[in-house]
Image 1 (spheres, one colour):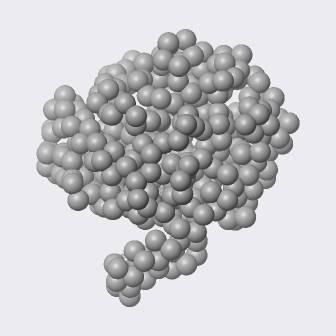
Image 2 (cartoon, rainbow, N blue to C red; image 1 turned 90 degrees about the horizontal axis):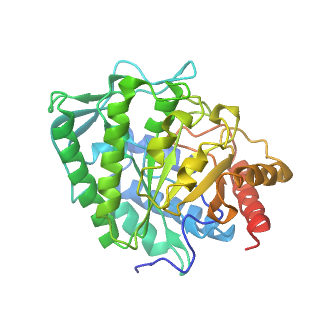
Image 3 (cartoon, rainbow, N blue to C red; image 1 turned 180 degrees about the vertical axis):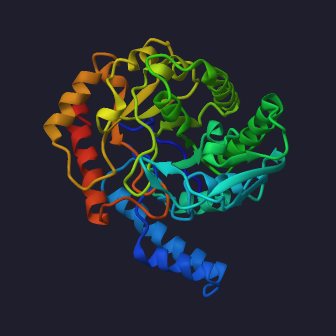
Length: 372
């Protein structure tokens, strides 16, 4: 079964970032598999069953696009990179630091020429997702942005092949991504989201304007993302989620979008998912740069936090949407949770019931604001 996009424009007025809390049954199955007590086929069967449940729940709540919850992944980004040729997952001596908290250990080594892998496990995962999505609903695939893969010891991404030749690295990375995106499209994907922590972290390292030493990275990110966007089929929607870190209900970066707004406005994508769940995100003023770039892109406001169970006040959400509409016309705005609920398999500090209440709040609020 191959699904195509309906008349609904994406991003949807009420949309999602991607990941959901892993059910206990799935967590136990993954542990059993890692300990050699469960075979790959049995794990895949359990993953399939739990993904079917999560898809059914998303459809029940009225979402127009659904994901597999990233249920086949341990990390939102490392699993994807490990599936490319030339890159390999490894466990470094320490984890990432999130607001003083050290995460589980994980990193990537680039040991050979980076290249597209036609057998990447994400392809089979998307095929299954697309096969169970009902008519009128779109299967949304999420992958990490190419900028997340830029060699950086602080991000535990080590280059052992290109010897810091950024142009050579970019050329191979862009080609790998272009072929990967085309493969997803050939499998029926019409809505692809790239998840990007780089912009949020670069903004947090700067004040008002980008730090000079970060400019080459920002320019490389624009080059890579636009090379992917310009090469994709016209009817494939490409969006980007800008994240400041999401691990065990903790965050990694803080700061307004002002330092990176000029670069974000240069991207040839169809929509932006931007985090605005607390004061760490700053004001809506930088959105005007996107609104004025002439591309008619949608901006999805991540006003509903995934980091805690407390429900936001619907009236306040409407006020904040109205505030944002001073910089981006209301017809180009949408609403979503600020991030996924489980960017890694640990998940945030909510229950599954809390998670669904958050989604329901997003759907109800958006319907009331946009009358649809």
